[in-house]
Image (tube, rainbow, N blue to C red; front, top):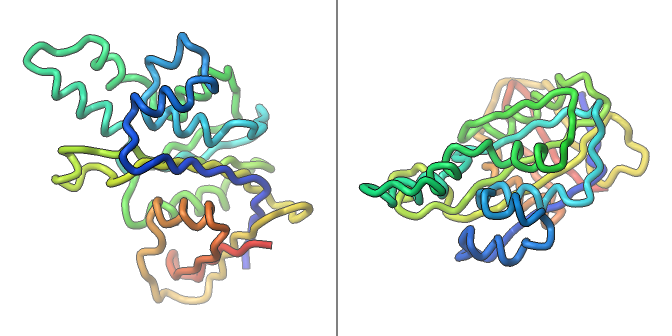
Length: 218
């Protein structure tokens, strides 16, 4: 059995109908004014989730998102035929986690950006298990889509989370376990289900990657 321990969790679950403009108002005090207007909705949420979370140059970070800056892209496309230069800049801005790390001038040993759907959480956890750094930040989230939601290319709600995961059980608040005991599988939790479990401190388990996964709270 392989296990890792959770030492810090912060979840950002805004109102379901909150748009990027509302997030800028609500979270304005958390970011420099010069950066605020250029940040995407996901960047704001990820930045809030990472607030007060200490990161060190020797740490690694695993970043997970299925749709990333979907809303920023929607807004830019909606500005045609007179394309907005500001919305274009936002739509090609560095991803949410990069916006935060650049703003904080935060060096890291490694950054692992992952995208996917049904197996995204599992892919991220496998990456964490294989990462040699003593501390790994697991960060993820989504923006809420509008018309792209109808095409299955956006999330129905916005959210973000951040957690510090290590091999050290001292002072841990949660534990992730993987037991390689057979091939029976199911898709596992979605990124949203994972985020809600972190927020509620709810245990979850599933089978995948030829074994059994579990998240429990200590």
